Image 1: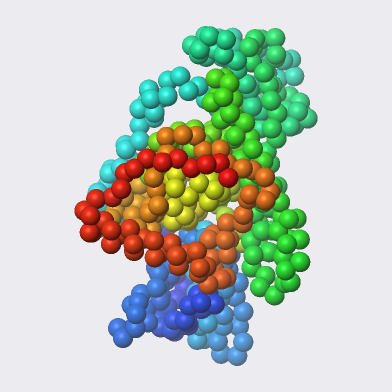
Image 2: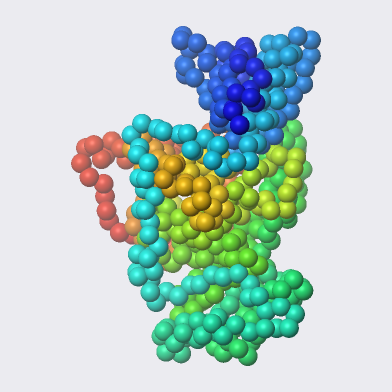
Amino acid sequence: MEFAELIRTGQAQAELLRGPEEPPLRGTLCITGHHLLLSPGPQATPDLWLLLLRNVDSIEKRVAGDSGTITLRCKDLRVLQLDIEGVEATLDIARSIEALSSLESVITSFPFFYRPKGLRLGDAWHFHPPECHYKRVAREVLLRAGQPLTGPQKRRCSEDEELLRAVLAGARPGARGFIVDTRSPQAAKQARMTGGGTEAKAAYPGWKRLHRPLERGRPLQESFVHLVEACGDLEQSMDRWLNRLESCRWLSHVKETLSTACLAAQSMEQEGACVLVHGADGTDSTLLITSLAQLILDPLSRTMAGFQELIEREWIQAGHPFQLRCAHSAFSHARPKHEAPTFLLFLDCVWQLGRQFPLSLEFGEGMLLALFDHAYASPFGTFLCNNEKERCLCEVRTRTHSLWSGLSQPKEQRKLRNPLYVPNPLAIWPSAEPQSLRLWQGLFLRGTRPPEPSEVAWEKVWQIVTDQEKTEGSQPTDSASEPRP
């Protein structure tokens, strides 16, 4: 298939409206196989506006008289409006965007064509071998798995039983084991009808089951959709806004997730227990809990490099199906059951950690926003496909660039790093009480509001730190810890 076959018109004159705080941009609109471009001409700044077509989540078009309007709702939650001269041009551009933004073949996506200056193919793909992490935490026993396939006959697996016996035998004397099941008891029982279920208690001596149900799949996606709809309604009263925020239950999901992660972390830290986290498939809620538990306990996971390693190990290599889960964001009219913002929920929980412990994470909100954007639409290959097998078949590691290589560029570091970071060797215990949690405005409201005073202050802090580094020639390295809020 040639991209040119899907492009119905080459260019048109258009005006772009990007948001309430940005001036409109007028110029020549062009479509390529992967991008929408608007060139304002040589006298304007910037000289080129660019949108990756994969970022388009939904498109609406309307015509009136001799012109038309296209509204693009993007996966990164931006809403863009294009006013285009000519009815036929409007319809042709809309059809072209619809076709090019929904290509299903992985190898036709932009990462396989992206060749930025200063980066080489193969760089940073092997920065984070999991073996190094396992050697470092050989006695921090945290396991994750999908549900056991016991079936209606309650079959047993001798290999599983031996593995969990060995885990307890290798721990400190008297250590207990906890199986944190992210399903409700009823859901776990119903899973037996389709071949799943739970471990037989008698076959796993020393292990105690704890049910901590977490929403997944469609309920989580619907919560995300309702939250974005509420955030986009600029005409509602404060009472209606608060009611809609509560009814979408997104912050409830954040609360339940952080509580479960704290349970797993406390079991290891305070009781010296071994913890096995599992759910239905072992590729969603389990990754969510093990990742957050490590951020709570492990200072290295809270560094820039350690956080990237955590995501590579616990999400990408562990088989979170990004291609399925992030096929659409919050605006698409399609609602496939396999879509779910599980990774976004993880990023939101990390943002809550950073807000409660502003000195203990080396990375800032910019890193979390970048990960959200790239998980849904990216020029890099890091989040492509659903598992390592698919990435190998598509030769992702040899034919695309790694996101970690792109984020390591000096020009990106100012947006990603926390200028207030001080290494903290202690565990950080977040509060999951409702009064301690906040809506992540930097993401959910970034397209509908002006910068907050805190964001302006953040930029000033960066300037102060930069000036101090130039003066002193080095950055302070004093250790400190933060109290629990």
